[in-house]
Amino acid sequence: MLTFRQLFDPTSSTYTYLLGHGGEAVLIDPVFEHVRRDSALVRELGLRLVATLDTHVHADHVTGAWLLRERCGSAITLAASAGAHGADRLLQHGDRIPFGSRHLDVRATPGHTSGCLTYVLDDRSAAFTGDALLIRGCGRADFQQGNAATLYRSIRAQILTLPPSCLLYPGHDYRGLTVTSVEEELRYNTRLGGDLNESDFVGYMQNLGLPHPKLMDIAVPANLACGRPAGGGELPDEPTWAPLAFTFGGVWEIEPTTLAERLGEVQVLDVREPAEFVDALGHIPGARLVPLSTLAATLPSLDRTRPIVTVCRAGGRSAQASLVLVRGGVPRVANLAGGMLRWRAEGLAVEGVHL
Image 1 (cartoon, helix red, strand yellow):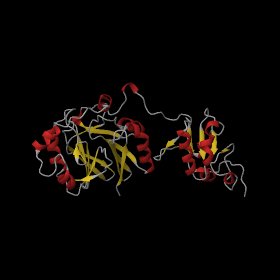
Image 2: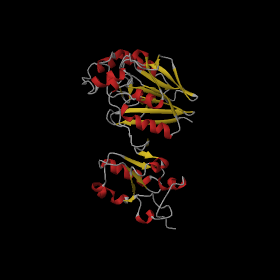
Image 3: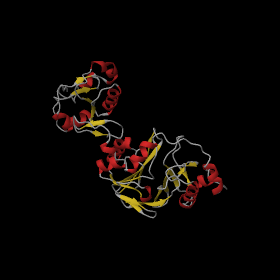
Image 4: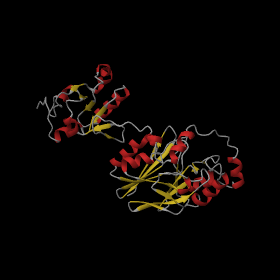
């Protein structure tokens, strides 16, 4: 069964796509700032990231390709014609990118930039068009070796010749739209659908009058290096006080055995109700009872010089508590994975047990 997820970056309105099969996955157009999120999702779905696929050299965000290779060992792939350096595989029209027993076919669709690619699923049920074709629109063609006539021909020959039912997933959408189809765009695309010809399209595109993307001077050089920061650059901070795992839900988690080894170094906040603190599960030695309903009011009294681990019965309320602490400016926070149920299941010490 094919695994498919559509992810979103609200800052640049960029879509990232995860496809998985047979234990392997690829990510299309990952965003640097969301590498933690994306790698957490890959891990939680039980997949191994084998490749990142950029549709082009982006001008509005920095790709997460290099950082994902550092963390997950995934290969960096993009168009040979993009002119980037540091990739593991430079793609040509007609290439295939395998994952599990499925694959994506590579189609060159230049015009927005000279190095644009569209990735077509092997059964032609879906295609990932980057900025070449958007929902009821298309990418601009006035920088990065763009050319309106070339873009028109690319879309018409390589994308809109796919089956009418083929779903098209764009690189961006600024209105919250998520998917379209070949049939829809042939009928309703305001720039090249219906009876509009190449001359109509070129005239339209030459009169857009758009300003250049705000991050262009930063994003393009970084993406020509596949997202590797210049001189090492500024990488996302990682916790150093304990081995932690970041979840797709946006929470740092600590394993019970890891916490048990560090009880003298951290503060444990048990956010259950008072009766639960002394029920059959007991509580972690040295834990402080702060029910979730009172946590916000307790924030000013917390010691911020030591890391805080939040705990509850199964890890749900304490995950919310960790988010409350982070929003309250607490610098080092983690949630106990699995809560007291896992703590007890692993035979770790407790106190306050009342049967």
